[in-house]
Length: 421
Ligand code: AMP
Ligand code: GLY
Image (tube, rainbow, N blue to C red; front, side, top):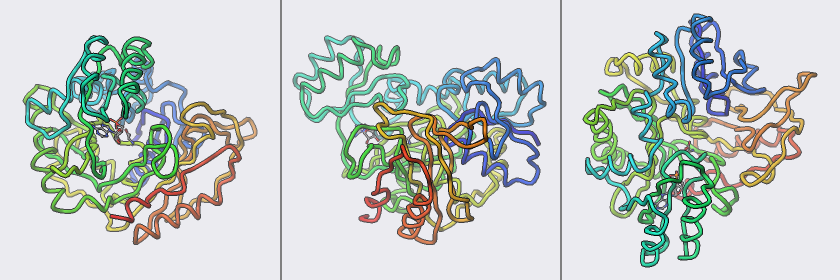
């Protein structure tokens, strides 16, 4: 089988490595992939948002199955275009991807179907929003409606910060059109859990839980990033909590999307906060999380391609999806200065992968002599699997010691919060 994976980050590298385990897979194309993914797939220089390019490539190369991994192409309708061209595809249609593409949509969905989430107000007008935060309880949470590279959420501790956030999103348009509307919501507290799930619109199968570390620096200090590391499973997510989430969040969300005529088929990501009043939804994503995927997929025992095809075909009810009872840890090595400003083009040497410790490449290109150069903010995801979480953390950091990348930095405390659970 010939496969095509849209995207070019660490998540896509993890998906490609897992898909390769299926013996029927003869070739995988990555659009566009990256210099590290090139070791595992044929990289094609078609951008992840180039829908016409991807459809033409899939037809010319008789692609048997496509996977659309990132949010932008999904929200733009990449899955619709591929499916309409007769290419079986994993990833929701645009009408369902809106669950991530618009925070206003997702908040209204949750309100309408009684799915627990933070209380909120929507504003289309900066003056009304400014007026509202004059008396809103602090801290308050301000979110741009649309996609913003995971940076569209501001937790304002003071009224001044809230006003600055509203002005920069709605007036200075720092996130472009994504900031035409904003959501201002109640600040919630509690441990955060990421739960990715496979759903074909009928069956919903949660994957093993994980925990992201979104802030740039140790001790959850510094600016929000796309994610600086992950562990799985998340020890805060007990079996009892999983059951509550299935009954009050997962199943109701899938049903709600059906009721809205927006059946979701693909990976539905639940970003949850375990508040003192029970689990609540912080955000939905219409795709695999990055870097959650890097710890979830190494623990998946069932063949990924089989699960993805069943998700696309609507036959998930016939599958048993199993995860190992081991633990995983992924430490992101980012370019110094990320997420604010950073430089690319630094040479890198990676330690050889072993069965239990390996590197997913998120941002790299190949120099003419074939050597690897850093490219982008998040560059590497050094990942390890072990029988226990402390061992997985130790093994990931030990493997990271073997990475040569002068301009890189990583958090030293990935997994420490989980160990306190
Ligand atoms: P998001 O981009 O929606 O994942 O939000 C980024 C981060 O902001 C989340 O992972 C949370 O840590 C935090 N956050 C978002 N919404 C809230 C909220 N209502 N209360 C507290 N923290 C929040
Ligand atoms: N790691 C969070 C996300 O993928 O949005």
